[in-house]
Length: 325
Ligand SMILES: *Cc1c(COP(=O)(O)O)cnc(C)c1O
Image 1 (cartoon, rainbow, N blue to C red):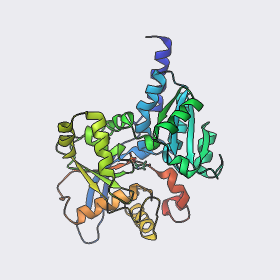
Image 2: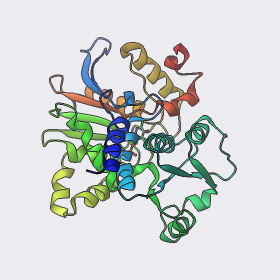
Image 3: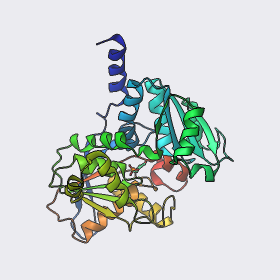
Image 4: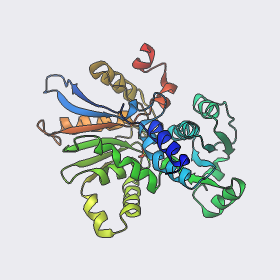
């Protein structure tokens, strides 16, 4: 092994240390009914500002970029993107460059706390119009970016690629992996696809979409195809997947008072801090499934806390746990 390889190994274990992502036992009181007991995989504890599952999705992207001796990572995100900050932080710790293509050409490097954090971590931000941003997966648009920023490793918005899925496969491997039901929030479906691939036949992976619509099912199918390559295998793994499209609370980024009240009540009764964009919706669906006896009291349940508290800072005035901090 060369000296360079040894250094990379050390940096890698430091940057992607998931030992803080412990399993916590939670008891949620439900009025007169039996309390709901479940485990929580605390991926939100991996890093104080960066969302847990974003680390998972970046791990093999960064390792690949580093092995290929790319200058850095180029990726995409909205102005409040957890993925952008995660990329900025992981890249800076890995000592590779980072470029963020940001939706909204009226913005600048200090427009909000998310963008400021990216800038402070050394990410170069490029602001593009909404119409150009919509072209972010088009070959001609990407070709131009490759010419403008040569030798960067491109990661799609939200870390939605092969390496992203592979990284998320490791989440369940850090648990007893014998759960009947696993719940998590879904955006691009990358984390959900990883969990489906990492689960055993016993488990049902419940992906609760944070977005209005029902496209996450197709997105997860496409990701499973990308990794498995075979229709028959995809069909087999798909039996472990359950997609929920009814707990979006109005859609992505919509935060009705009802949702804030729910987050505050979960914090008061369990101490768990949930974010309004993703994790609160997944918890809500899981609680409903327990109340509706889709989950039986004797079954083993895991909630994967994917993080997102960085994004929750925008609701500082209304979230109880942020007022206490
Ligand atoms: C990004 C994010 C998700 C969505 O993950 P996908 O892999 O895109 O489905 C879920 N929870 C939190 C907290 C996130 O930041």
